[in-house]
Figure 1: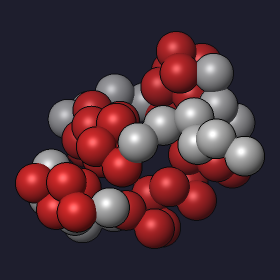
Figure 2: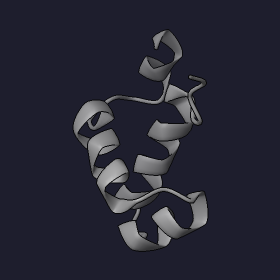
Figure 3: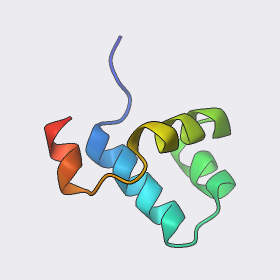
Figure 4: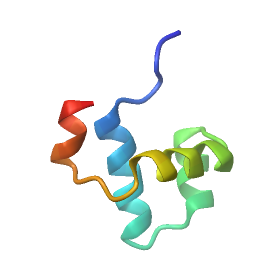
Length: 55
């Protein structure tokens, strides 16, 4: 199964949410569920953008 988003893209999504955008708006824009978003947040949260390079 092919991944839909790369690590860098997921980290960029999380940074948008940290900048003040609502999670529901991000989920709607990227076409993911809120459950998926929070799963990404628990897995990738706190990583720097450059850390995603090694994923």
